[in-house]
Figure (cartoon, rainbow, N blue to C red):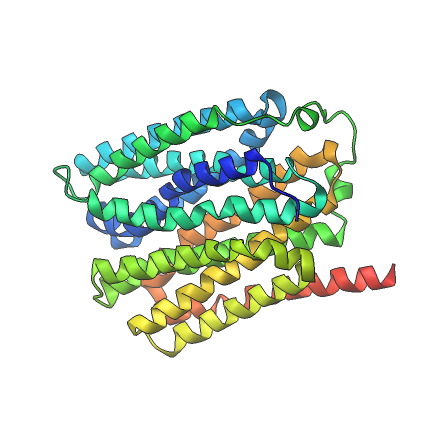
Length: 390
């Protein structure tokens, strides 16, 4: 197998630092929100606003990269994340809920830049290596699964308010990530491609392959976020599990999201995106069934492990399939549309998760997740039928 270039490994390392923001906010956001929010229904708002920040920023970020190149904008993104982490730390120290929400929103904006790492990696390799490159970049999230929660607990009491030190430490991580991004090597062939030609989006989105790639990534991300956002509160606040037990489940889940990246790129190349998507949907279905059966620590753990695996198979498959729906000079507008859909729907899922948990309970939250799996199955069916007819 051909060696992956320097950019892929660099982006994997930087991603490990940068994606720690997501794991810290996932682990602490609902707990901090529960302490600071004026109403329990708003407890997950800081986490949801991180996703909203990503959704709002993905199109401007992609357009900026089209104009100024990836390297400069990656460095700008790291600076925005440093700012967001510092604001969040200050907000916690002042018990300022809405300022904390703004800080997590800015961290979400920073993550919109990080989401482009996988596309930058795919542009650095040959087409048959794209799935592998995207999967390797996502491996950075495996380290982030350990770094984020551990950093949160180790620095929990370093400042006067619990967890304020965690976000200060996160700002330091992002500073090192920014320094590493100066080593990124722009792909000059790709950078020279202009968007002056190419099909209109209205033509591109008529392709079934586009919808399969989009729905796999979008629904995979949304369902994962919907269940993951509610889990720390359901465990720690409703069911009385300790912070260490909750941390263990969340860490295991995030590791399960990224650990399959060691082999998912190879499996997609070997067996095809559609089969891997079906495996991802099967993992999601098992997750929901196990979580419905019981709320023991083991059931939470098993369900969240399967949730992570299902996300990886759907998201990596969708990411690898998307370039087959566009030409090189169409890539930025298609990537922008894809990212906007993924993170807009994820934002809705995150925003609604806490409210549904408090209003209707854990089991209802799980039951309303099942129909979304059928949407992806339907998209795959129509894509395969269209291919067989042609």
